[in-house]
Amino acid sequence: MARQFLLLSLMLFSLSAVPPAHAAAYHFVTFQFPPHEYQDEEGEARGAAVETVRAIIGRLGHSVTIEVLPWTRALKMVRTGRADAIFTAYRNAEREKFLDYSSEVLIDQEVYLYRRAGSGFDFDGTLESIRNRRVGIVSTISYGQVFASYRPFVRLDKANQLAHNVEKLLKGRIDLFPSNRYVAEYTLAEMGLSGQVERLPRMVESVPSYIAFTRERDLRALRHQFDAELVDMKESGEYARILSEHGLTW
Image (cartoon, rainbow, N blue to C red; front, top):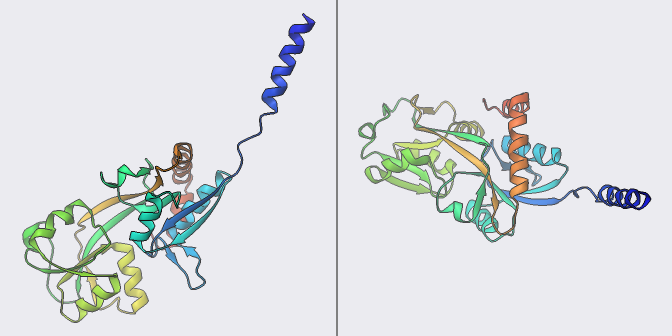
């Protein structure tokens, strides 16, 4: 009996001596897409999505550095494993080959069309209302499946950033441009042009975007934990508070 008690004591000691999971330091990447994510004048990552991600990683007891990069470079870094995760990313079959997406939506992207104020162009939710129109897009941005179905039937004009499309619109070089609602309104306010460009009332599509983890390492546990914390933040009202502070609604 004494021997059995000793063996049991040793087993319990060995179990209690297993150290807890260590805090980890992660490297995430994102891109310039204010007010969701952007780099401020001091080079620090800011925005509603950035604050949400930082809060979740902090809750999990880890630390994270968030780097704001051009989208193509950011995507390459997470594909090759030089970054642990990327946000905010649309889900598609090609990216799923190298990205492990969260289940919970990080940010819903509300895509609208914009016109020069008083120009008379309209959008009723059908292709026919914009067929053959000159439409400015940002070459590295996806606008969802609905707009993708319109692309062959409109005259696309590509730019490197949204501000360039705003300038083209006001010069009459394009008729419309699509954009995330909050990104467009943030950009127009920064340019001092809010009164000269107007959002058409009919939404093109609401596209969910996510955080996605590299498949070069096994980060499934982190992904599961991230999802659980994000759900908790939404239920507690913390998520809505963060979005509201950055001018977004949920």
